Image (cartoon, rainbow, N blue to C red):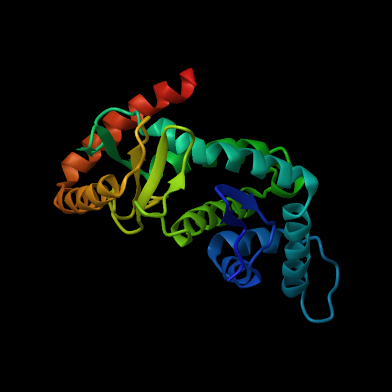
Length: 252
């Protein structure tokens, strides 16, 4: 499967590589059909059908836009900030945590990090003709943007962060684990953006073997406690931490 984003040497890189199968599946969904049908309505004649011709044309437009210098520059800028932003979000109030040798091991829901980058990229893409609301392309913009975010999640998960092989997120934190499944939001709410990052605080003291072993045990404790969180408690964490996260982002 092609990924729009890959992780390499501590950096998220935008590749511009679209997955055609994902696009075809989207074009056959209700939102995708509406965009293709609108384009087909302006097609006078096509030997094998106006809808098919319109879909091929839309694919070419999307691929060209995804590979354009403008889009690549916008996406790469936001991806560069995304990693460090996870460390900033670790300071939000009320997030589940344990202490590991005078270091904090904190759970950062993916929802927070993804919601921020979604908002910022969506605003930028809305000014690009291929994705502009004025051209009736909101559904195409959503399809592309959620593809980017899915690739971000996959890229970090594929790096397999652990206490022995962490992913750095700025100068103060490292990702030492990823949960892909936990549902922070009620089922049915969109976007769900399940799961979370486990981030460990860095100090002036080195990450010794003993600290890494303690972090593994801390991950196990957090996994166990989080799995039993009641729905009301999950909602309360998202509300309290979300409000704090917005304050942190405004002051950053």
